[in-house]
Amino acid sequence: MDRLKRNIRYLLWKEGTERKDWPSKLAERLGCPLQRAEDLLEGEGKNLTPKEKKALEKATGLAPEEFSGNLLEKHDVDILVENIRHLIDGLPHGQKKEFAAKLGVDVTTVSRWIGGAQRPTKKKLEEIGKYFGLPPGTDLDSEAIFLWTEPISESQMKSWITETILRVDGKTLREIYPALRRLLKK
Image (tube, rainbow, N blue to C red; front, top):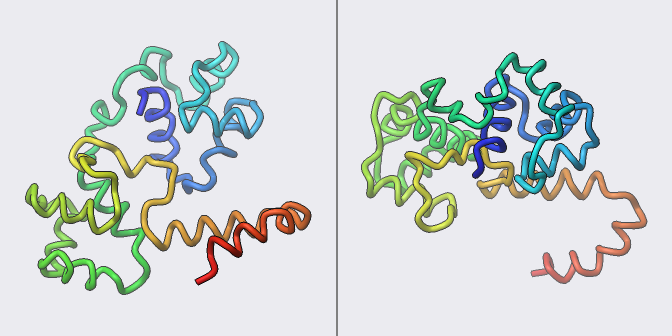
């Protein structure tokens, strides 16, 4: 993840903006179209325009050179703890016990991981990655998945699909329905 994209996502996350609202919040701050903000968050928008840089600096109070630095390191963010917290928070209510059992640990151990009082072993980190279907080799210690824009857990994916379908207009829905039906039919 390039630094600018990661830093923008971090600032939105840090202020408590819900992930689904990141594009609209960024568009509002930069005074740019929603699609442009989405492109910036996804890393498809290469560089900020001078106007966007100025707006971002004004909104955050950060100097231009700080956006090319590592804000997570500068603010002492414990990436592992935030990743675990994000993954566990994505579980449906009551599934934390099931998660702990699947990993062969007590639910209090999971709570210690979330709070940063205890760190999972390397083997447990691999099991956590597998449990959540993360790409093989994902390093939970250094890769800030809590800043990913794509849904990770099953419940997050279902929510994304539901919310997206609810926003689709009738004409588009009629066009994509046959394909959706084929894909989702058991």
